[in-house]
Image 1 (cartoon, rainbow, N blue to C red):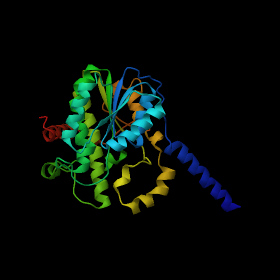
Image 2: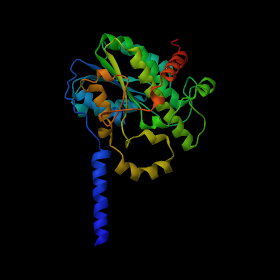
Image 3: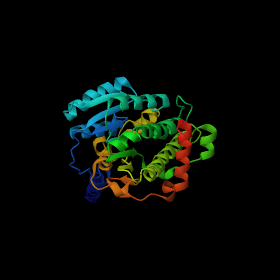
Image 4: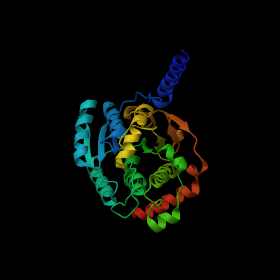
Length: 317
């Protein structure tokens, strides 16, 4: 009888934890987006796809910016079907290639007259090198989005009020920016062990927060605002490039303790849509709530240095 009571308490606590902590808050904005245009990178899967579906349901013209044309075309049909909207367009974007980023921006600027929301959602968790010789996670998670945002800033300004939303992670708390390593190796770190990959991923997520911090300063005086966020622990495809054994071990844990992709998209949507966030430009959100960050994530000198280095790497300086 005692064991049954203990088991009941454990199950009850687990249920409460799942309902309150895992599922989290939902975006409560009821704003409609008819006549507005949004770009969502990495929108062929996961929280990017759910973000695109929600924006399309609200009436936005949504650009699915995807690396794989095959996966993008499948996502295009899904987003159209689930949103009931035909205002959804696929454009190919490979963040591993600065040439591809420039080509995407050129095509977008030629074909679309406005840009109201830029959702920099795509992310990768793996080692390797980009087409331009940068560390894969630095190149995809930060540098590609940095270039994309800068190439589209003028269109964001002519469409203002507009927003940039950068999807980061709680992992940024474990990150640091080694500028010597960046200058020497064009990467945020070296190593191929899981601990190395996680460490470098954390560094790339810190880049997202610092980029947003600096971007907000540079956008002062405009009606373009920017936000960064932790979407929560998501049961998505982020770990698809890890070993099959690791994925197998992770599966039972993610199924119960991680958010699904709809729940995981809510903070992105909150930052993109919630009314009255303009005074909080440059800030960090989690669970649809403003959060404070450690000093290293709002370091003015580091943010400026990262910006200037990124400009040089992208050929913008």
